[in-house]
Length: 424
Image 1 (cartoon, rainbow, N blue to C red):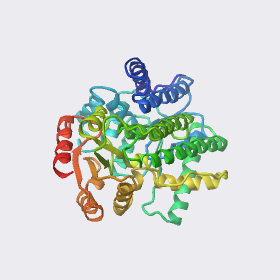
Image 2 (image 1 turned 90 degrees about the vertical axis):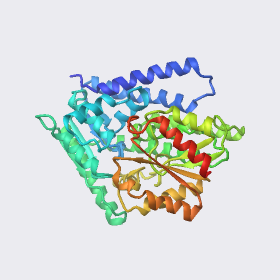
Image 3 (image 1 turned 30 degrees about the vertical axis):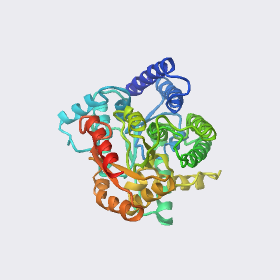
Image 4 (image 1 turned 60 degrees about the vertical axis):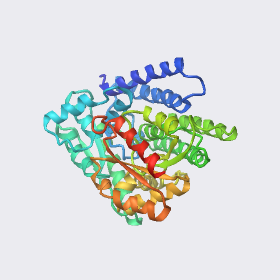
């Protein structure tokens, strides 16, 4: 029986149209990172949609999971948080219809749009789900929203929750590894499949190769001027969330590495000129990707790095299943945004200062996504840390990364322009 993932079908069509348009309009050397991403995104979407057409189980998962573990099974994985923000990036009105739909239903306006959009998509019957998986972090939005996903329909969708520890010590590592093993066993029982750990090893190998390319890319991004355009950070973020364990992730980051290496060897900068180098301690914005082109060309400010472009963990080289799962647990605890948002705030501060030093930033821009209350509470402490430790200023912009109506792009541009004019 054919299964339904209508939002993925829509994103595939949008990516196909944009890919064709870019190929017709832009010169070959322009937006090479975006071109590579669209090509590999379509390949991955095509596989997932084909699995749904063949009637294979559909598993919905939280972005904070190491989603390669789900390749133990023959199914169609769907990342909940990715969908609304992909809509924000691809379409003029983003996922606003879905935000309004769930707000009208009575859901609090101040929860995360990445999950509110998915709530409305489920209300609309756009996705058939067989099982849902989430960790208990990195935020309260996560815990509350996934109960909705599971209980909205009369026939509840099985929800499996992995308890994500706050601490990051040996005891926590072993505990979370057992949580992941239990999760796989429960998923297998629900969908009637035994975990295939050979498939898991292949997914881990793909992740390792992709990680190695990202390490090389980040090493090259330390070059002044930065060889990659600011938009590359948002694109790599999307690949991190959408393509874990897939060969498309390897191919994409390999192509980005080749572009970056060539530019460094030929002393080529990203578009525009580089006057300032900014580190973003938190999220990039997704609802207007032309903002990054504006920042590169009009302000001369590079977004050198954000947390989703740094993996604060080692690649996995083991071939032993138990050791692989233990290392995946470590990676999951240190996954971008999870690492900074699930534990004590000094992790966010230490990681941000490290990134600013490593990538030679002369300023920071903090996107205060209003739903991320535990992170927003650290703004003043982080600002003082940048000032006292590195002597660089930090701009705070209150916004919703997936909804352009909260803070307009014009207002954001004005704030960045004034920041560059007065403090840099």
